[in-house]
Amino acid sequence: MGGVKVSVQDIILHRKSVRHYDPNYAIERKEILDSIELAAKSPNGNNIQSTRYLIIEDKELRAKVKPIAYHQEQVETSSYLILILGDYHAFHAENIQAIQEQALEKGYFTQETKTYLTNAAIGYYRDMSNQEYLKELVRDGSLAAMSLVLILNEKGYQTITMSGYDKAALFAELEIPRHYEDIMLLSVGRGIQEGHSTVRHDVEDITFIDRVTS
Ligand SMILES: Cc1cc2nc3c(=O)[nH]c(=O)nc-3n(C[C@H](O)[C@H](O)[C@H](O)COP(=O)(O)O)c2cc1C
Image (cartoon, rainbow, N blue to C red; front, side, top):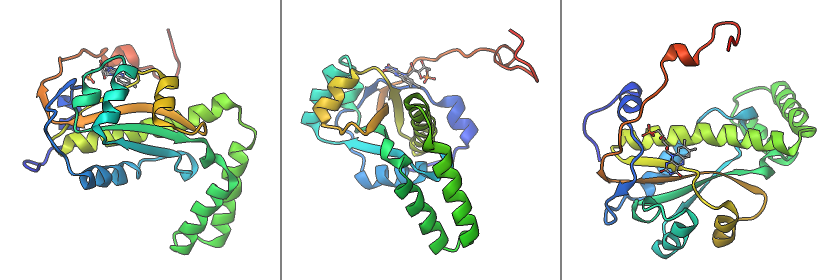
């Protein structure tokens, strides 16, 4: 894929969720990995990097996931199906320390800054409720997912994000350990039928200035 360089604005204006894909269209795994590498540069809370990506390549596995995702065609026919996950282990002090240590070794900040950032992050997560942990994972995973959508669309592929699946059945089928949270599924490939257009609220209807007024 290549062609004319498009702006972020172009992608946002023209992207549509695509539900019908060419089942024989192959994308190199390397291209998906490169895209994920870029998406992982998205902002994330305290840089604890909780988002994970399960690339589901195997066609037989995809066929098994299809009924779990309520028979959505794209689960099987897109070139790749990616399950975006959040890892609860990312909140552990050892993870936070290791990441800040890596940045210190690279010379990105001083020992003093490293100690400050590490303690601040550990303190921030220490007494959180499960609901708050979940919110952290979903925030970070959703930002990364949006980046991935933009990157893949920039490459000329089509995508759809999906939450329409039975979580328990998906975790059982894919044997996903319990310390992961599902964020969403993402299909990517070459669309064979354009997605339908969708409306959006007027900006005046979704924006407040200084106070929420309705
Ligand atoms: C978190 C999330 C989950 C979604 N789940 C599904 C889904 O399971 N099946 C589906 O057909 N579309 C799904 N969509 C796509 C939305 O329906 C779509 O983004 C919305 O209608 C706007 O259309 P557009 O993406 O073409 O602009 C999902 C979108 C998001 C962001």
